[in-house]
Image (cartoon, rainbow, N blue to C red; front, side, top):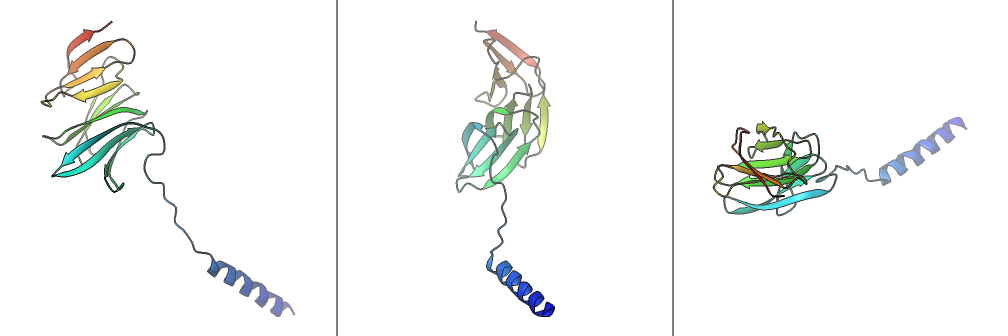
Length: 155
């Protein structure tokens, strides 16, 4: 009788286990709010660069596939920008840093400005970075080494 019951439960358990289809669930994309996005062109193909409150920036193709993950900030990323000629990504964060990255996701440099940075963008010629602070009404111009060249109070 024991053998019969054991055999019955093993058969029932095995058939139930085989009827289930295992699924692998992986997190996809940003895990929190996206604060900034920019369309960029690389070799005639369009991509999207995003910055998020999950402290990362990502590069996506238009099929929604993540191409590169830029990870290094300790707080949310407020802005992203791209200088096409040199292939450099710029991120600015609530951790009061700006970071420059290559297109493989390798950090080139961290810039630690002496003021909070809310927005950061490359100059049109790519030679400088312009920043806007968070609430003080100040625009600043920086070189790629983090030296402040100009500070313009707006208020």
